Length: 518
Image (cartoon, rainbow, N blue to C red):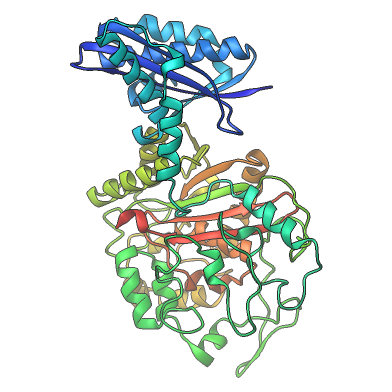
């Protein structure tokens, strides 16, 4: 079935005042203009002009392809929310126009998305051309319009290099695969970490021996920015005092726990691990210990390197940690077994900031949220900007921290020292009072991941969730051990991203991006 994009706008010079509308029908694959419509409508309000633009755009799309699926993009929050059924239509002038728009195509074949005004320049220019013609007593004529050319030039001049959360970078990844698949990977190119995880526009190149390829993964304006991912030491881990300082701002209790946990030989005694791929126990100074139970991993056994076949568009999860609550700056354990706090004033500002950043990129197609209030509020702010619905997923809830809920790490250390030591030493140990172990959470998150990747294959989905689920998804995608949860920093309202391919491969594309908060 053919898909079309309709962009529409309307304006009034006086509100009410001399008004006009513009609409354009685009091919979503090529961006080609298929049809334009514009008209001066006399004295009217902005909203009436916007609705008339919507009706004209839908009718133009129907004339081209009566059976099409239509994606409507407008910078009118009012029209998008009302036509999506989330807001009531009260104004008598708009009710008949909304009803007319709803009759052009069956409701199931049209979806609505809010976009910023700067991304709606083509329709805006058409509306202004119509108003200019009306001011001169003339009708708008397609042959005299320069809206398409002007909008195209503006897009080309304003297109920024890639930054922030990736949308669907499959095309760029496929080109990179094709370029490298002509020759077999060598020891210097295989497994270097670029692969399908490279950002759109990144240049894949073999790394000299003894170097890394971080610059390939972070091509763009953020390439030289240090968000703390590689700070502290050459091995990429925070030193203890640095991690504590970072966790003050983020409220990431796991990062703090990792910073204050025993290190060196003491850490190995507390958290023994077996060599990768074996079932043997790791010996310590205290004698042999049992290796931890196998943790959930990505489905199937993915092939490695550049010879993996292109399996089509991945399911891309843009992972958003909720904004701050009153507990966040105090670094208190806040899971799914506590008071379910709402966003603080700072958290609400963070939610609006991240909503604006995601709206500007325009790549998110679906939103799925944890059931907890702080995530639903954050998701709601984004959904309002994008014109999308929010689906609630129980599997995305935070760990239940049992009796530790609401306490700081230091308070837990004072009250439950033995339980805390056990929790730091083993992913199978649960917090005091019947909380969830990291192993339990990993199984829940892995099952949720599998359901969502199957449901949203080829889609870009925003998952609004918490520290532990996001870190767990990243850990599983990397095949990292459970203790890596203590070696990641995840700030409030930060964005991470993982792409999942049909062959079982996963690509971590972003971690803890907070550029939208600065």
